[in-house]
Length: 416
Image (cartoon, rainbow, N blue to C red):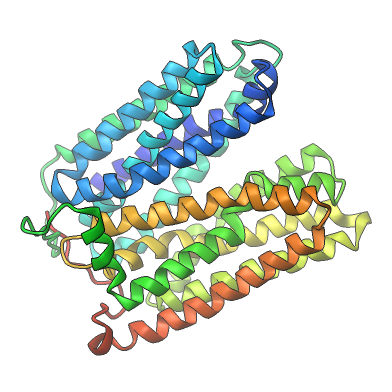
């Protein structure tokens, strides 16, 4: 029951975020008349807040009750989002987005720790898959509903979306609080925290970096993030609109198809891949990313069907996502130093966020300079690099005696 509430919490939170995400840039730039620089800075400050909050939230999840960490972080996100209703100047809007980034991301490592605590090894991938699927579904519903709430011709045209998002994060926190107060479920896992381990961030980073498998996991995380997630919201739509000359509705259709494929295939893929090496499956994800970029490149030379190929590439990306989401966090947690599961997840969330934040910059420079071939070629190379990194990770994990890594399947020591 706890895991079900956690899954529902993810859906509700992302419903709120989905109500804001597709419209925030146009709201700041046009509806409020603050210009593209402020709109871009808002996204950047959200990422900065995320980079700051992820390691802190992860470390707190190791030291105190992760339920409290997740709930307080979500409430902070709700307050920040509600405050955007009253943000009538660029400075207050930017501060609100920064605070929102802090709240949203501080909750993520704590949520992952709870998912690990509240599930057994046999169900772990399935639960992470459901959390991801629920989040995707919530975001899609939020974006759809917000389409009837948002009016970008008025300065207050996003009030309904902001309040919806605030309510979503507040309800998400409430659901986690309810789950956390239920009678503890029997578990064979102990999340053992080491109170003697210092809080110092530098110590934590050194301990994490000392594990060879985690170093390769970091490379996999960065390359897979750069290979798709960093370009999902900006680079790929910009490529479609400027280089492929497809209609705006085609970009929206591609995003919708991506969500639908994830929802349709997620549980099927989890069943088909059960018992397979996590690192090996991440190699397949890198291969799927590569195939998607090949399709995107082909669209450039087939203008008559460029829109269809673009939509198809998003469907192919989604197949990879159904493997990526259930695997990466459990695998990372299984390799974490003792008593540092939350800290490790927080650091890797920050790594992924930082890599994703580079996406708009890379796309802006390359596509803005007319270097479409460079944009496509770079991401093909990054995706191929992800395959190589995942192969190295698999080889390192297979040498546990030499590296200190935990052999797969991902068996954790989790402290209650």
